[in-house]
Image (tube, rainbow, N blue to C red; front, top):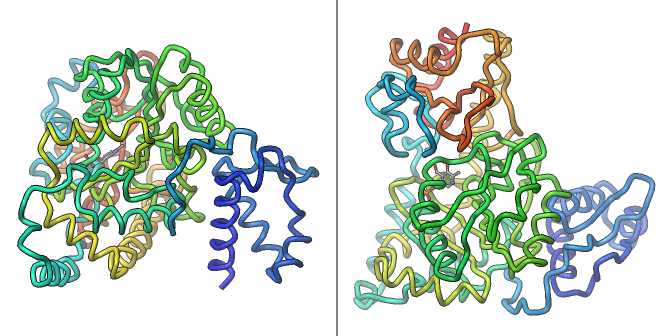
Length: 468
Ligand SMILES: Cc1ncc(COP(=O)(O)O)c(C=O)c1O
C-alpha cells in the first residue's frame, strides 16, 4: 500500500516540477507536515523525497529543508504531456576464448559454461505469453499492418511505451516523440549520424564503456572523448571538449555505479548551457535489486536528453526491438534517418510487444526476472566471498552483470580467461572496454543472467575454481 502511495506522490512531485508548479529552489514541506496533510506515514513521504533526490529533482542537505534542485526544471519549450572496440592487446588477439567472446555481442561460442555478459536467461523468454499476444494480434489486426507504415513505428507500441516508460522509468514520453528502432545499436547509429550531420565533432563516452558503441559513434565520423568513471558514475571534467555525451546513468556499463545526483545535475546543466545532447542508454534500468530503480535522467531534462531503451535485456536481444524518446529538435532528423535506413522496424513484433505491455504480461515478466537475477547476483557475491575472497565485486546491486576486479598481485585477465577456457568456461575480460587501457585495473565482466538457471551453479563453481 505504502509503495503505491509513495509512487503516486513521486509522480505528482515529478509532474509539479516538470510543469513549473514547483519552481527551482522552492522549499518542500517537511516530511512530517506533508505526511500529516496527506494522511501518509512519514516514512512514505521520506522515501519519496529520497527517491527524487537520487534522481536529481530535489536537493537535501541534512538538517536543512528539502528543495527543488536548480537544474531539475525542464525549460518551458517542453510540450509533450506527462503520461501515466578499442585497442586489443597481443594477449587477447592470441587468446581464442577472448577473441570469440569479443567477436560480436551475440557470439557466445561453444563453451560448457557461459558467463559472458550481454543477454538475459533466454530459457525464460515468455513464449506462452508471446504466443497468446501473437495470436491476438494476427486475429484482430487489419491487413494494412503488413504494409509499410510510419518510420517512427506502430502507434500501438508507441502509445503503450509512453505509458510504461512514464510509469516505470519516470520518462516524459508522448507517443509522438517515440521512434521504435531495431535495437540500441541502431538507435545509437541513427543518433550519431544525425549529430554528425548537424555539426557535432566529438562525443563524450564513458571510460570504460561498451566497445561496440564506441565503434558505432566513430563509424559516423565522430571523435570520442573518454569520460572517466568512478564510484559516482561518469566524471564531467572532459565535457568541455564534446558536443554530446552517451551515458548509462542507472547502471554504468560495465563498472556498475549509478550516476550520483550531483553529477546528474552537472550533466543536464552542461547540456542546457551549451546546447549539447545527452544520450541516456537505459539498457537495464528495470533491474535494481536493493531499492526502487532510480528514474531516468531524461525526466529531468527532456529537451536535452534522448532516452534510449531496449527489449534486449527484459525479453531477448534477437527481437531487435528498442525505442528512442527524442527532444523536438532531433525528432524529424532521426525519423528521416530511420526511414532511409530501413523504412521502419518490423511491425508484427512491435504489435506483439504492445499487446504484452497493455496486458501487463511484460510487467509480470520483468518482475519475475528481477527476482531471478537478484538471487543470482546474491549467490555470485556470497560464493565469491567464500571461495575467492581476494577478488572484489564492484557496483550496485542491479542489472544482469557484475564487474569482478582482480588483485594486482595475482594472475591477470588474460591468464584467468585462458584458464577458464581450458575448463570450458567463457569469460569476458575488461580490456576492450577501455579506449585508453594504460594503468587500468584488471577485471572480468560476469554475466550472471546468461546461463539457464540449472546451469548457473556449475558455471559459478567453474568460475571459483579458476579464481581460487
Ligand atoms: C551497455 C549496453 N547498452 C545497450 C545494450 C542493448 O543493445 P541492443 O538493444 O542493440 O541489443 C547492451 C547490450 O548488450 C549494452 O550492454
